[in-house]
Image (cartoon, rainbow, N blue to C red):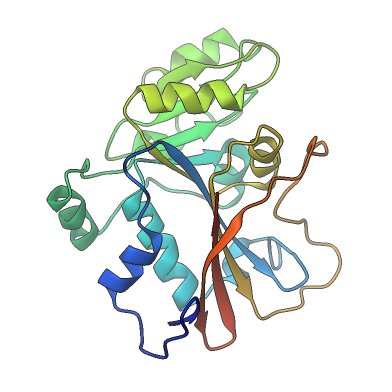
Length: 244
């Protein structure tokens, strides 16, 4: 993997160079999104994002987790993609310790209806206590059950107030948030203008009609412009980073 923008450089990127390219600004709170897509915009291949990924995408995927303070994922994506607990390898944990970060990254599950269950391994086997973000109409009994394994935060009445949820997480010291989707969550974050940093891997594939796109939900009230920070290449795969 090497940089082609800005300042094209054919030198393979080692881990420190890659960290420099993706390191968040620790002086301010932020929310980053990370997705992989086909050339024609599909978010999955044969139903799963794994089919679009590759070694370079997986490398950046792991790096972004290492750099964040919390990982936000919608409940539907947790279920469909079969998320397990958010585990980092020893090298990533050592890097975090050396840089004054908590050894493990807490998972933040977002669910309006709480159809995820307290037995979900992503919650019960988490190495650090996770969070569940929901709204006032979710079943109180399910909230109580989930409180045994996670910190349950109610944001909003009939739907999850994502702006309030982000503010609450920042208040808890989780400055740099990373979201891995899914599409409805990205649509909500976009509509509320909460995305500061957007990392997108473009797989060199044409998936064809049928697959969903990386964003979904009601139309956003207005487009939000981000600036291109870098473009990396690994053979025919491109890895882009945009930010405010």
